[in-house]
Image 1 (cartoon, rainbow, N blue to C red):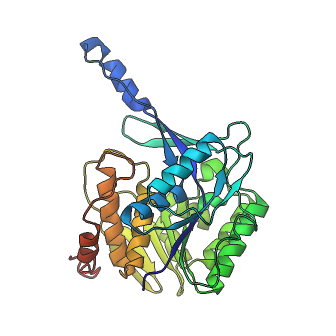
Image 2: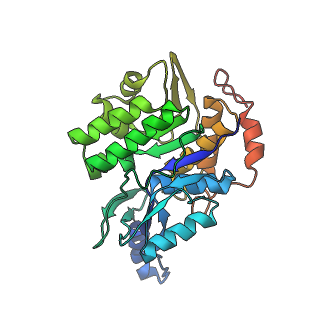
Length: 330
């Protein structure tokens, strides 16, 4: 049965600095082959990107975020709506400016992220008022991510309490760890909030040992996944090109990724998130939804444009229905 999809979390602007590309251009100056580089300004944030991908796939998600009223906030609001995202449940915070995430992209197309708070700005924060529009009486597919764990105790408590109530009323909760320990750390309040969110979640998604190990304290990602694995949860563990681990109850399966020529990586995990949610909402099993999401993410990282998705989405859903983890066949 198709459910409403509600995404709760961060929306920010991404400023992409092509540092590696510029270095290569400088090396080519002596040959007379001079090229230019472009700084890109676009919508971003884990939940913003996930919502945009869902919109592009045709899911028409509700997105609840801390909307700012400055010019950047208006740019982000318009950008989301252009992708088919419904912001009607979001509340504006008057006088607040948006944060900006600066992505420095090296020669290998890998990026280092820096969060910058311009004067008058702050991280997205949540409270009873800006979460009040989310209905609790109708079960939904609800997604949120670790960027809501912003070290503000009141905001983290408000998010966790809302997720717990949605869970009590029958919603399915999907949580992307997205720890970003190098930016936010892991103080006692943040750790306790993660523990609450993990307890309330039905499906937990994470990327690499740096996320899973930061949560569990283990030194190996597989050990971390097994530590989180319980009878009532599904753990989805991504790690670059390696097969995606899907741990459900007592089962342990892997789903292969696709080998493609990589043009960009920013938003790959968020694209996976959006495609996975879309697949689950279309009735795919967990492994089938992961296979589908791997394919959509592979398309995105190998195709020009911001969070590009293919046109043959429903054909891919049909192919995913034939995927069986026991054989790896489609």
